[in-house]
Length: 266
Image (tube, rainbow, N blue to C red; front, side, top):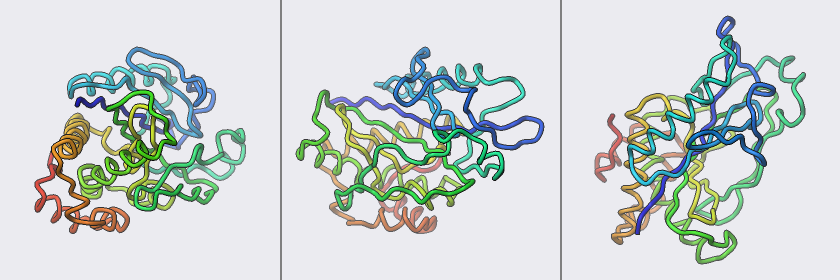
């Protein structure tokens, strides 16, 4: 069984002169319903942020090439006086935010699910000036599945719980931001997809370097390979990863990664 790995990270835009966060509205082509196609992926506006999607990759090098290509094209569409910013949280000026179109200020789209309860996660509380940027990872191992099918939903839950060990724990160690979890990114957050699932726990922190991108790809595959071989860390270690992720306990995350042999060093 083979795996395809994709991603749809989000980035903010900043003014080079003032360093203030700027809305992507009017700068970023494409929408959620109609993404703007580019080579090896697509671009779209998501609230105040710029979001890009990459074509699913069957190997590590393709994953890196796809990300680099789409990010470069996105960067080329931004006026020179602005720059893309890899921050998990952005604070906008209150008056500036109030002047934005309503579609930019809205939070959330379709609900995601909690792998530990099987139920939808509650919608985030609306914050007047703070917005967050994610680094969701998509896994494809099937095709044309009904996202409401209980068997497929159960397979997604199994995959997501394993990813909490292989991706969620390292993110606690490596992601310096902690504010995003006030709105998004608690353990087990996912969406079932016709091709597999979307792991929605991570922020965009892993776009900061090639080594981090490689780590995300490798650990995603390691989690998938473990399940295929019959090894399930969440069955052996219960909800320990969930508790560590939700509490941002870096010491416990590092200790458990070392114990389980999960890669987190760059």
